[in-house]
Length: 442
Ligand SMILES: C[S@@+](CC[C@H](N)C(=O)[O-])C[C@H]1O[C@@H](n2cnc3c(N)ncnc32)[C@H](O)[C@@H]1O
Ligand code: SF4
Image (tube, rainbow, N blue to C red; front, side, top):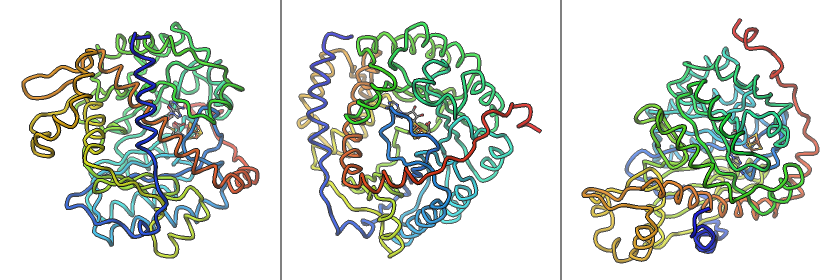
């Protein structure tokens, strides 16, 4: 652990928690004024076959009988933004597990692509859905990046995460990934480090497997823990050891940096220009679906977390937005500072064009602290992260997402009865992880 890690984290916690206070806002239900340039579209599909104990995303158990209505509402909301003048250049479909219903997902992608020219389409999935015939359909539909949640290849850890049975053991997952190789311009694998019970040796074995599989992109997240998930996670997975986090991250850098470029502090890409989920190139992004966030014109928006309410309000001709938070000038600068440097650099010409001298005055304390702890260096053309800075930004982004997760939990607490009823009524469909990749190829 770095000497400043604890106080650093507690300051971040205080600051980000204060920044994430949304207010309920009925005015927000019609789309905000559309930006002049095309922006990114995030589509949230909250269905999962198994609810992993560590996960704080907005997700419910998959229900076949409810999926069509939800996807209809999603497409309705996308059309609404399009009618309001929004154009989308890049699409990210996340979850949950968007691939639980491939027919609905393909129809939704086709709709977005029919509305405006789209450069990249990225979707998230789990290893049990990696069936080459279906993957070919996604590719033909314009999907450029497939992101697969693996977390670890260690069977003991997968069991603790309650993923072993449904999503497969390490060997099955590796076979699935090998069969998916080469279908998409980018095959990304999501991994987690600093899991309860994970040792440096286990992590090193995961890194060796990744090297062997030679995937295009690896995203390695530190375990992030929201308050409620922490309790559930401790019961099934045990406690993790934060003292190992820095050593684990250094091990990841040692193994991946010789072969990959850090496209962000936790995403490692083979090629130039590969899409990274957490790097927002466009200033604005619109989130559709229940429990999605947007950032448009300097304000953050969140949609309702109630799936029933979401379908009803979109069917009534409104967006799903129920909460808004308008950011002040300094808050926008801080957000930009966080997100741009997470991607590696913050250029002076960008700062001058967007904020002028005010940026240096208003963010003087943050800039000085980051320089003092050796996280940033000020080059001739840009501020850049040092190797230590990469780790500091992992901590900062993790804390930022912890505060987002706390908002998710609060919103979900308001509708706990609805979510519990939904999950109790769900029947889990049989998945095909037991089939061998040879069978899948035929
Ligand atoms: C939200 S999931 C959605 C895609 C898919 N359902 C899956 O499990 O991969 C995307 C990724 O988020 C990451 N994730 C989820 N919860 C996390 C947590 N508490 N800490 C760190 N990463 C997490 C996992 O790596 C996961 O693969
Ligand atoms: S990690 Fe993925 S599969 Fe597991 S609950 Fe979260 S979204 Fe669903």
